[in-house]
Image 1 (cartoon, rainbow, N blue to C red):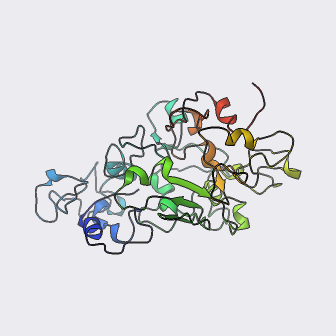
Image 2 (image 1 turned 30 degrees about the vertical axis):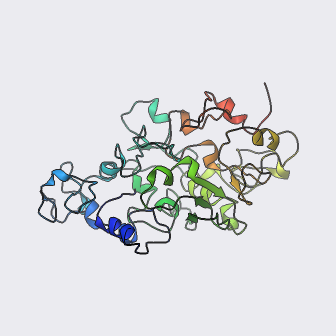
Image 3 (image 1 turned 90 degrees about the horizontal axis):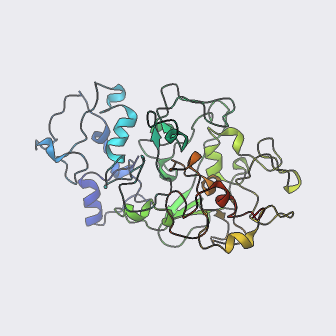
Length: 355
């Protein structure tokens, strides 16, 4: 939940006032504007400067304000119910990332797009579904949101140090006594290999690249805590999808002796590094387009490239089942993959079995 709103942002750029080190992440520090999301009495009919409210939300001027929505007042003095409030700025707008369905903006989103309850049974199989009360796949014990999945289940609305304001304890984290999941990151300049994620463009207003597939790299820091089983990102996803990530040889993914995987590894096993023909670095590196992988060296493709959750799935979703990325290796990259149309083509990014 991120938003470009208010003169604070404009002044900071114009006057070169030092912002947070991770410029471009909103709802934190100078870009945390209480009145964007909260109202004291649910009665606001004009902006704080007395101007006509037709300027509307998303304006670069303080007169604009987020409209009140629904049959309020709402809990926590919110201007609308949680998902509807977030989508006020994050659906169909160009001043903030568009996170639902098709993308209004002109870049390929790294996370793809969410869907929501009511979109239809087929559409709702294509990613995270807002409003869903279904148990999360692989959750053990089974976890679901009793009020329906909300943006705030995964993102801190008031910001935080985690990558893209990701909440530290989604799903079963607290119930299972797990530690806070920290996904470290940085932006701009030379890739810092001690960070889990690196975004090349740190420019405050350039959302066209900041949230793009082409702007995002995933490192594999040597100092990643053993608790994270090789991938801080996968450990975060494990908060809800607890059976789908774990240490090699463990009960979740197996991999005894480097083979005999019970579930697809999303850390530890480098592409082509284990014998038996299970995967091929030569095939992976020989393609023009590659699914995203982690790298300790900061080089892609390279022999240290390791898959993680984002290698096969869009975290929000896309038009494919389960938000899968059908990447054949050629063609123009989009949120569904490139010109790939089947799961098999995605698998053959790294695997050689079959024709």
